[in-house]
Amino acid sequence: MKSPIRIGTRDSELALWQATTVQNKLEALGYNTVLVPVKSTGDLVLDKPLYELGITGIFTKTLDVALIKGEIDIAVHSMKDVPTLLPKGVIKTAVLERAVTNDVLVHKGADFLEGKGIVATGSLRRKAQWLSKYPNHEVVDLRGNINTRLIKLIENKWHGAIFAQAGLERIKLLPKEAIELDWMVPAPAQGAMLVVALENNKVVVEATAKLNHKESDITTQIEREFLRTLEGGCTAPIGALAKIEGSKVHFKGSLHALNGSTEVIIEKERDLQKFEGFGKSCAYEVLENGGKQLMEEIKNELNNTIH
Image 1 (tube, helix red, strand yellow):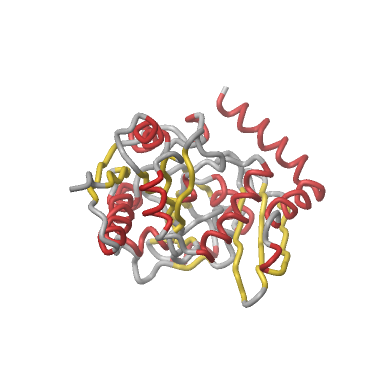
Image 2 (cartoon, one colour):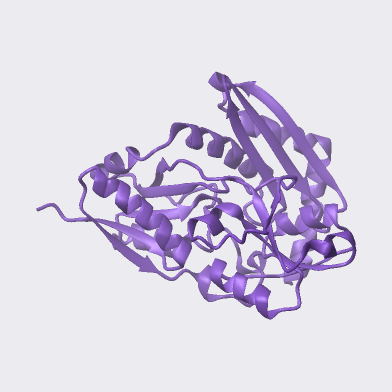
């Protein structure tokens, strides 16, 4: 009997749901698998905003180490948490079919949208875009897995909190009255799940490659290329969404000042056959149209916050 494929995952309810989805798909293809849950630094340190934690890969580092040490064979991630540069020897083997990409507002009554209000999120992107639309609102930091964040919303005197719709739907916690924020540009690769493995583990690479969804792979590649070129990591309010419509790929990207006061938005279309480099060229256009200066201001502001 062949040894099972060890699937590394964070131990939150959503992460386990994602890993189990991968497990079920691999088992359906005839592979033997086992789940290996681990806690990440991002899950353990909840009293600091993400950008203060040295950020890139805060949720993925623990699994990367387990992978490189040979304690697991593959890792399953929410793709938006994964740094655009993978560790040496680790490769992307599959992007599963993407779920809905948008953010939603979970609230205790939407009347506050007309006046003053307090909204919670741990994301610089969501905060900046929210303040751009609602400049008289206060945005407070909110960390933790989905369940923790929903409980904190109930326990605090906040009017609402922002979540990815896909995460809430996956673990059946999306309230009926949640408001879809169709005006908010999502995080690059939001709603997508990523499988990574060691490049030299040919058996596992071949097995998981069968789970790859071509369209989701292309759109997330464009978005992450846009992010990497802008040098965002998780430390800048960058949004990106690529959509394939027929023989075309449509892209919308955004870069906002931390307080939402300034923004650079780009919308472009390109033939699907020529998608390579599309994200990069959109990012260069953003940088040329005020994005370079905006990125400098963001970096300086964040450095001053941390030091």
